[in-house]
Image (cartoon, rainbow, N blue to C red; front, side, top):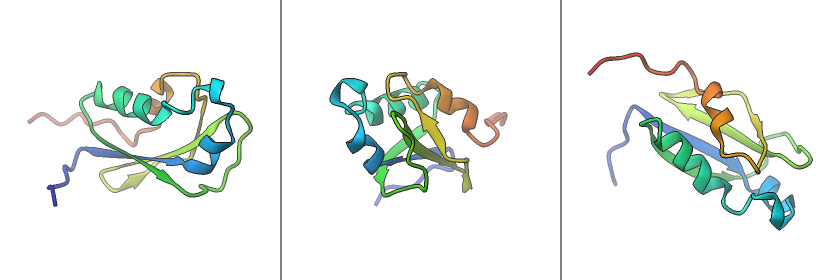
Length: 98
């Protein structure tokens, strides 16, 4: 198996939320857009579909982020957006210099 980066961000996306959305709502490609948004920030990103995260928002998708072992709160993401609002929920963006 590959080595896991300490800078890797994991995004757990509720599969149930995605399945409840209308096709036109943009949920089908939401995992790809989440990955692209976080990768553009320089993070190694893994997006996984998961079971219920305890929130069942109408018209939104529950997402939880993990970075460096820290979990964010559950984010209720608008599937029509590009995922940029996830960046504000990442635990303490790194200010380390290599």
